[in-house]
Image 1 (spheres, rainbow, N blue to C red):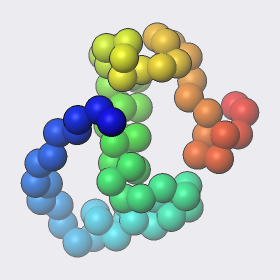
Image 2: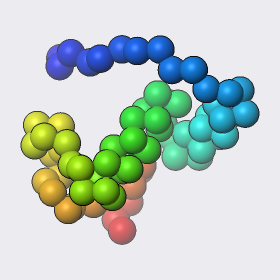
Image 3: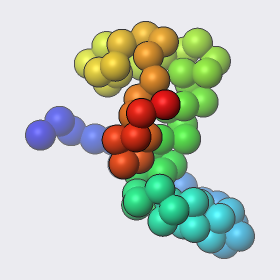
Length: 70
């Protein structure tokens, strides 16, 4: 298993509730949803992760939360 970086994130209860609702709709944990949102923000700004963290390759869309096709 790859090691993962842990850190404390302080957010408002309202933001957490919004993320929790969104995560539930996409069948993810809040942690996985936050990671997904951050990765998408990086990708959209052309700041892709190194290839070992980005199995789809540059510019390719990841499948939806349930493996849906675009």
